[in-house]
Length: 84
View: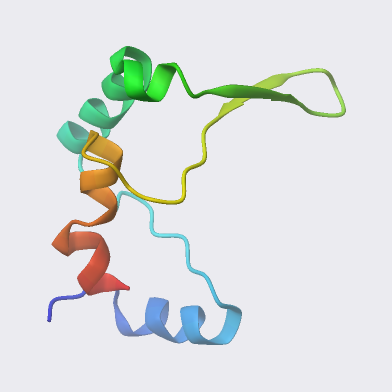
């Protein structure tokens, strides 16, 4: 089983319960995810907005069962699953 974490990242994950991995997705993968977030109706139609204390808006989406959108497929990909 492959992992994309080094020993220090794995240690931090076990200590803190999370780890931030910069550049986990390459430039092409990031572009596809960003494009899908703006164009895929399955994503766009389920977005909702939350304002922070300064009135700035963040668009969010949550789901319980990953579908066949690019986000659902990414969540089930070897890169994510094997690393976790």
